[in-house]
Image 1: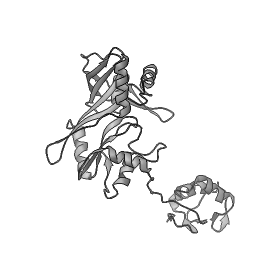
Image 2: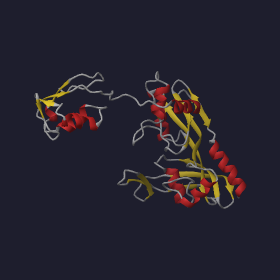
Image 3: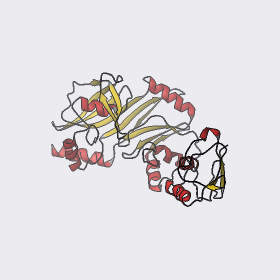
Image 4: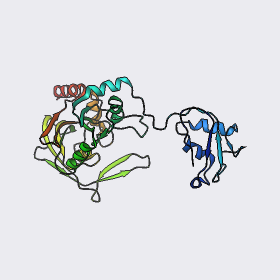
Length: 319
């Protein structure tokens, strides 16, 4: 049986389980000693401080079932220790909450904050909320927003609400509406974009979505909100389906990429918007209508941030 190290630093004796036989000692220690830097593991191996069956071994030594591995005292952090979120971020997210009930939190997520940690990020909205609401043991994201997209984000406080909203999202029970600033003059007669979307992962690990006949069916409804001459249009987008990057790819497919979109946008258009002060992706989940388990609906709206507002003011004065 393999013994898991704890945070207390003392000598550890690890017995190699049969299913781990044949594994290199360095890989074994990296898996067992969660929270210990890789450089420290190789240092104690090089110095001969790790013993197998009371003898020194090299990093390439392959373990046998029943081997006893002696590990010297180490500083080991808890493997499941949550990341500590900076106070400034916590205060910002607390202030962003627009609705909180017994089973649901909805917040106006700022642009630039991921919904969860991973891919090099130590934390996101969900980790921060778990720190803000330690008594809420079942906090889970109901859906996701891209890191650079702002707006209404639902977080369930109870499993029952999570199941209810997932079922509503699979049907047509949830109405989500976004604001997007797009390039050019969107024709008012173009009220929808229906184009199948295919998700690809590049060698770099980056996700890209393309319009492709082999993809999944996707439909977005669009409505013109305000025009800025022929240069730009503020539109409201309502995704009927919920595909990854759907609004961003459908806007580009229609010939009107979203301002500030580094992945699917138009660099020249984004640069001109940036010169007006708009240093963000101009996609914001501004309105939400959801059915409640006990009956009735929750209807919410979230204002855009100051940068967005000032950019549209500058744009209105420039055209």
